Length: 217
Image (cartoon, helix red, strand yellow):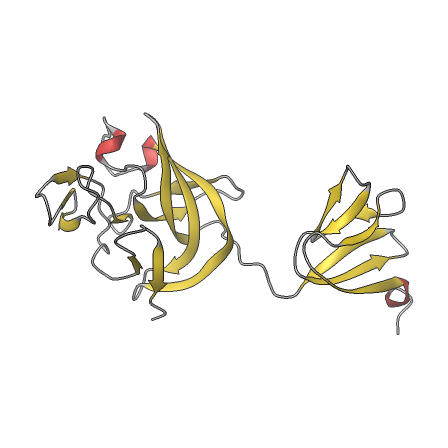
């Protein structure tokens, strides 16, 4: 056993919110947060807690690897807001689109992202809501290193996967790469539609507009 390993004091398995150490005695490391009210360090994840007695750091080793998104990842998310120059997106999972569309993994928590108007499409965009609208499910690519991420959907394979009719709320059906049609009321709406919109990369519950299941091809 090395000298360094003898400096670790194992505190056992912890759940989020469990107290690990006092902030006067230890510094917060990975997998923990500081509770300023009670003056203690608490677990932020499920895992095993340790106190490094040499460096005086408290940390938690997660029970499993945290799933996160990063630079160049292709991701699926939902539009949470639309501004004249930005589309706001919550990222829910990472996918691989070639050689065949495939869902890789769901994130442990949604990551915030935005699509600048310059990254919406490979053409001049005058009205951004003719490309994306609130609650659209989209696929795009991360082009920044840190959250909130910047997404691009310029490539034809990126864009809207699922959208709802603005008149009756029914899921719209693919009509072209720039439009979707409501099978119930006949309403046609403009979007930047992904070339993979009919690939069944994900499915949405028609009633609740939630991801129901993914296809692990």
